Length: 324
Figure 1 (cartoon, one colour):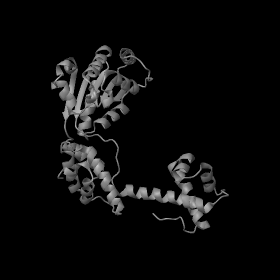
Figure 2: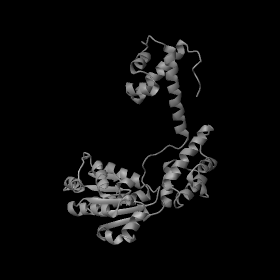
Figure 3: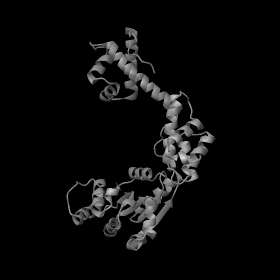
Figure 4: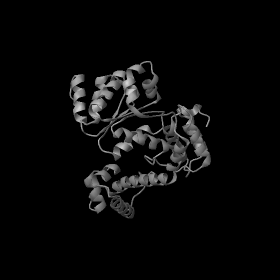
């Protein structure tokens, strides 16, 4: 990329950048407003400039549009060379988790306790995008008690945030769920109290709603054998299927590397060691390392990642203690 601030702009240069701008908008189908905003123009100014009717400072407009052009071209060049985020892709673990969601959607209760970087949240989002009547409520530490939990569920269901007593708020949810053949997914359910879990179980019993409790490994331990597990005996008995998994599978890592376009054997082995180390962050940490390493390679104008890039990126990450 070059600094064009002080470079003289002649009529031929202005025409070249004008033609590029018109062609770019036609190829991308980008609305005028979005194009102008991205390039730093007022919409009317950009339209007039590209049509050749602008009466103002045309060299200034040409410089502005050239800056935008070289940014787009640099980004395209980088994307052609280095890995880019492929979005959601199915793994062995995501297939198992989808199976739990499907079972729950039939009116059962299922549970999953997985370590970080196993694709839990992405699997939930993918299922919600594919199936009807799926409500996903993600809990936080502040949602521990019954009323905050109910309010978080209400938000996921698009219900107005009304001030109500706990019993009334719960009844609103029940009224919404009756006869809907819905699935209620509670993500990060490990944050919830015994009373909140029992409230969810009561909703299932009264409405027949499918209930999927997803969280970390502590969730399953709390339900099955925690010091208050006797208070969750009714919930535990109703869980038809459950899944516990600390780290991604080796197959998950292979699929991950292929989805990200990582073919080098040494890098695949490096990422596999990271992903399969407990508490190292799983595939999420691998993604962070690839993105950081890509910036290193791009900064040195290299076309491909090297194992040195990954190791340099790891030094600044929380997994520097993992000997990969």
